[in-house]
Image 1 (tube, rainbow, N blue to C red):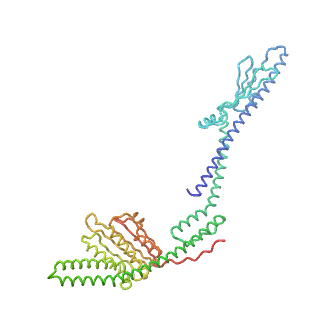
Image 2 (spheres, rainbow, N blue to C red):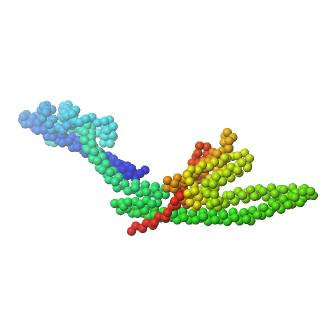
Image 3 (tube, rainbow, N blue to C red):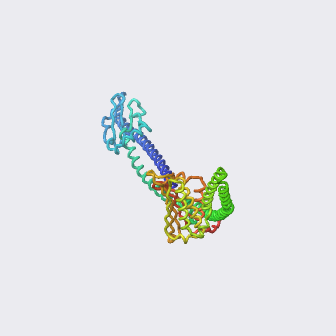
Length: 475
């Protein structure tokens, strides 16, 4: 999850928690307000009824000792004025039936939803009632009880919750939006730093980050710039060292080819001549000796063929004499000749050239030749005849686009099946050598699936990577 989304989700969680706490506090305050209004309504009705009681007592002259009742006209508008909305007051005289009076039960707010009513009743239960005696001097005169009507009380609580929650939600949304904008602006440098790190991963070591306003991001940016500079220098030094190692390898190959040709080749030639002389001298008298001499000649001939193949792989000095295009054509012809020499051909090798390969520098030409040689060897190794019996085709394409900053594109596509994932992860020296050669030249390599086999594509810039100057360390 991205940092901005993570922070916004946390902010939303905090806002929702605060909103839930505010709603709980509002509901509690509404419940307490109803309780206070219930007790106050009971006290006000008791005060008015007590006045009626004593007035009736004085009117009768106080001659009767039986309990006196107030006048029946207590259920009047005058009494309703002292009862809070949604409260029902019940007067229970000692020797009479209780009588109730409710104030504005039907017009108190809108009906709450069922889920709110259920949650409220589960969390807070029923509202308590308040009871007071009519007069403390004669407790047998009766009792006044005030209780909130349940439906009206729920409507009152829901009305307060809806109004205050709407205001709180609007304020929370506004604060959350402003906070999200501020957080997004504050963490924007992190996105820039992440993009820079991805560019570093892809090999763009020349990037530099701007100076951020925040001190922490500014230090991170400087560290990324220093890392890019060190990676650029290390990569350039590694490329130069790899290039030098390949130069030494070419020199060793030439020396080995020269020694094989001069020493081993001459020995094989002498052996072949000696075997021919033995065969010629022993033919009439010793047919067995002549047969052995012919066997030696055949083995020598096979060794000579193997030596020629080894010398063709080791030698690269033909590039100086023939050029890159002619050397590649000779390489393809050699693979076709070897395929025909084995009997039924498994692969047919073809060469397509676009552009002027004579303009390719000598050092790059050697690397291109070696890369093509290894790719063709890999294609010939896993090349199989097609399902229709025809030999698989291996196509080597070389494109030199001088207009595109002197880039050279090499593609080897075969029809021999194979798995790109296995070849891409292979630990053999062939693919590893190709990667190292291309990396030393600052190029790129891709291995993918072709229509019937594998496709190895390399892009090689003919202008080698240059060293990046050191970046001064941040203070």
